[in-house]
Length: 106
Image (cartoon, rainbow, N blue to C red; front, side, top):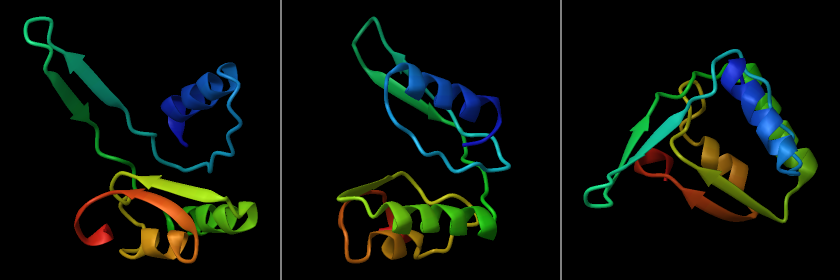
C-alpha cells in the first residue's frame, strides 16, 4: 500500500478489526469509484490505473506470502506494472487459491 490512499486503507482495515500485513510501495494505491444509477440501478466503475511496483516490492510481497503460508490465497485484479508476467502463477503454485484476473496473467 502506498501514499495517502494506502495509509487510509490501513486505518480503515484496522478500524474494521481486520488484521492486515500491507506491503509498502512507492506508488499511490489505486482507487475505484462506483456510481449507482438512481434511475435504473445500473452500476458504473471507474478504475484508476494501478501503480507500478519495483522488483524489490514484488519480492517483498512474494516473501510475505511464502512466510505467511496462507491456507487459501486470493489474488484479484490485473498484475501491477513491473510485476513478472507469471507473477500470479508463482504466488499460487501449490496452494489452494482463488484467482480473479484475465488475459495473460490468467
